[in-house]
Image 1 (tube, rainbow, N blue to C red):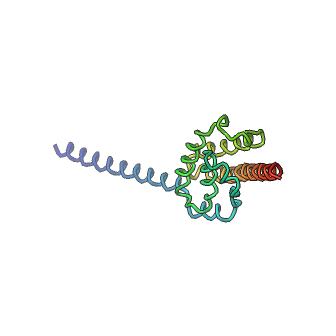
Image 2 (cartoon, helix red, strand yellow):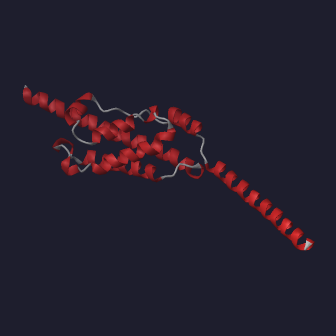
Length: 174
C-alpha cells in the first residue's frame, strides 16, 4: 500500500513539474513574438515620408467620391499610434473596396490615376494582410514605406489633375 501511495505522490509531483515547465515555455514564446510599438512609432516618425495631402481644389470638386476619405485617412498615419494601424488599414481597405472607377468623375477616369490607385490599393491590402509580429516586423516596415510612396504618387497625380481641370475651366471662362 505504501509503495502505491509513494508511486502516486511521485507521479503527481512529476506531472506538476512537467506541466509547470510547459506553461513557462509557452509564455516565453508569446513574449518573443510581440513587437516593440515604441520602436515602430519612432520608425514611423523618423523614417517614413510625410504623406501628401490633397489640395483644397480637389477636395471641393471631388469630395462626393469615396476615394477622398480613404486618402485623408492615410494622410493622418504619422499622427496615429502604431497599435491602431491594423484597425486603420482595415477601415481604409473597406473604403477602397467600395470604390469603382465606373463611378469616378470623368476627369479622373484616366490611366494615370487608375494605375496609381491600383498600386495604392494593393499596398493597403498587402499591409492589411500582414500580422504585426516580430517575425514579419521588417516586412511590415517596408510595406509602410511602400504604402506612403504609393499614396504620395496617387495624391500628386490627383492634385496635378485637379490643377489641370481648374486651369482648363479658367481658360474656358475667359
